[in-house]
Image (cartoon, rainbow, N blue to C red):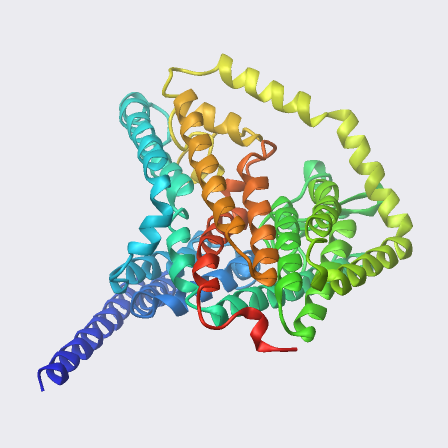
Length: 501
């Protein structure tokens, strides 16, 4: 009888929380309407209601967060007309779900045992960032005369650096069993297929003149990606065939984010195909890889063009010890050869662009120049202020554009901050490697290897700043959490391979 009463009380608490969320949403909507800002009121109401649902159903909200994130740029500009609030939609799914998952997860002993090595690097990095915020951002806010807000920039910097690290915890408890692991790999295979298909339609609309692209624009907009040239999906775009210029954004806000989606997708699509027990899903993963290669060639993303083929070759080599994967590898090789042979002109054009760009600004020399400039412009050993080189803090000030990640970290939080970040990613690479090496199941081992190589690749990648923005800022921490969960899944009763063909 007591149990029934407790259950009734718990149910009424959930109902009261949902009712409170609905009331707050209605108040926000009505306030926006009364103030003459109905769109703002509607967005606020939907946001508050979504957060209430996300807190109550954290697993569902986290899945929605992962599946929505690759389409966020398209939603922002197709539905939201570029409104700044739409950039926050994915976090409306994420943060309430994180709080809700922490609230309902009573036993975290297994996660704490595995992730405990991360504690000291996180504390060290957090302490350095806090000192930087107090002794760099705060004094700058006091003495600053122009329109900028170093304190708010610092808060954005904190969110950018630490905001998605809890995804390790989320992934560990979101992937509850082998079935949810398969849902993760299969749903993201579908996401890759959808994103690449939409981007290919975007490309066809551009080459057939349905979208003018950048040809009718003037000045720097004719030679740089801009919102004025956007077409069908995504955001800023560059398409000027007269100058042989193309930079597609796919479904993302900016072209270079699309390039990193292609790179991330290469790891995940290969992992899904190498580990899935069903022939249908292995074939779909193969098609996803083929589309990734096609979009790498035609999107004009030089970084992706340099790494996607290399990644696929390395993954194929590293997984050859699993004899069960030989048909998959053979099919992949045949697909890639056919694709490359059927697009030799396009491949040659993109290779020429890649080589010309390399010759004009060799990445090693460029990275060295960035580090030298940062060293010469450091205000103190605490750096110039957290968030002061973070692109997403531009709404609150004038961040410095630094296009190499560790130079950017050095500029913001100084040499000890760089050591803190290196200690964190090195520790994460080590514990995920231990998790991968402990696996015996061939399918799980292949999946774990692909995920670990992604973690390792991003941990020390010095060019650009993929850890600062989507999709890598999400995938890096989430993939690490999935990898840490694999040994626990292997000890379960049912394996991925037991589902059958």
